[in-house]
Length: 165
Length: 175
Image (cartoon, rainbow over all chains, first blue to last red; front, side, top):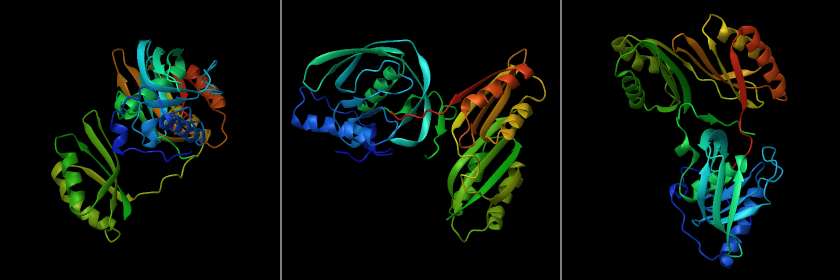
């Protein structure tokens, strides 16, 4: 089901989400809602549960067919993700469903390994780089109540108004 | 509510922003966008402020004139234009740097103007020794413009001008 997207200054976006542990039926419904909501917006490659007002540590990532990602993983859900290694640094421009009027330059690791639980409740590991790594780190930030405006070096120099399209 | 644009420029000293915004607040104004910068010793501020419909530009002037006099500011007040009068294509950021010499801003702004690209933000400064001129431009391209074509024109101009230039496009994906 497509859910309404929460936009800043809604305080839920600044609140850390709770761990899920082993996913149950309600978590699987949440997973579907995340996918459906992300797919209902153009050019949207990821969404985190707090963005639809669900304060649980789950995110959905789909970089398939994105021009910046040569070899994307199939769409996947991250439950209780933890970054176990991060290397490199790069500044890249990010837009966010919950801050629709702006984009911002954000410095992130370029290569990461993340442990997470999948929808079957198994603990898995993903290693990825570049834009897909950026997307995962952006979503994990949402689970911690962190927005791109918290990540910029300068609110003056690194935040840009986005044109309405 | 209606929007009024105000610019004030003068020799820098503490208290200018506080005095201007205090006067606007007292008359029921609500600040929209504000940019201010210290350029060498001159402090410049541009404000767009929402005011009640019955507040005229003259009454804003009456409120700000004493502030301008106290702080030695040149003041301009006028109706604010609505957003969206420029180009409506993709947004881009153009970064230029090189040895300082007259004409860099003019050359790049002329190219953008010829391409019907609209500058929405610009700042530049001279830094370092020997002096390097650093210029950042945010611009909106006309609808349908191929960014690669603009990139190539900028590269040619950079080469001819003896400066470095790069163009980055706005992020088009949402995470």
